[in-house]
Image (cartoon, rainbow, N blue to C red; front, side, top):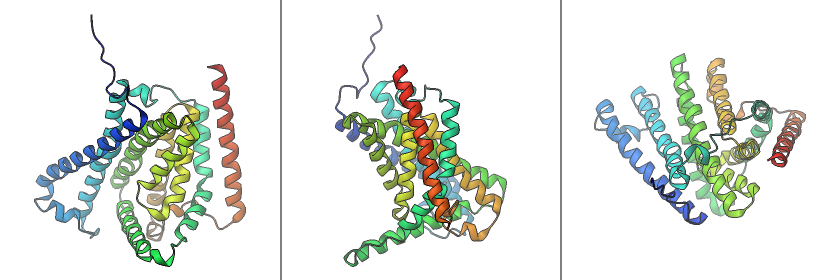
Length: 311
């Protein structure tokens, strides 16, 4: 007779599971960083750490190393830990992450419309966020935040400034596909679920996971638009019941920006704020964006409630 052992984390409380997830994230990031650097030495030499710390993005070798490390770190932080955690929590990774549920086509279509229609409002929020300032007593913190934000933006600009199809396709993998998979695994598949279980309220699960989703990007002056994106993705996940929906929408959101910037071939656009894509100075367009997004989200909520009644 075959004995099936229960999942390692099954009997533990949610706070313990959250602590286990944090430890798993730290360990995975550490090992992936060490492995990534070791694997890079044959290609970039023994000065790989010095090269990685160099902010000269005009150096092709430096930029290629940073892209490589970006992929490795994303895999180590966002992809592997949720998969391992899901196995430890249930043994059935696909079931735990809601990858076993086929999304409805109408849900994907409406969700896609939501994320595109929301662009003017998201850009407006980004403008407000960038114009925020801290009290004079926190000037040192504000200067540090602005410096971090500038460095992050310069790196993104360097990544996006490609001149051929191959470079654009690599960006789609690095900036659209891997984050769409990994960040949805972590924030919607695991974090949202854990806080939903802890609070017994899926709205709190969505809000907390959106806050952590935005905060972990460490781009303080883009916190509000990314928080809104996290909210939309969270509700799309809960109301559809399938992780495939926010994964696809996350990919569309990131991929649209990559293709749009490449297709325009405009240096001025690349050097502007990426989040300004879809922005409008017309208050009516921004207001209409909000109204239509709310309308479409209410439609998805109705579908969710109808499905709950039939289950």
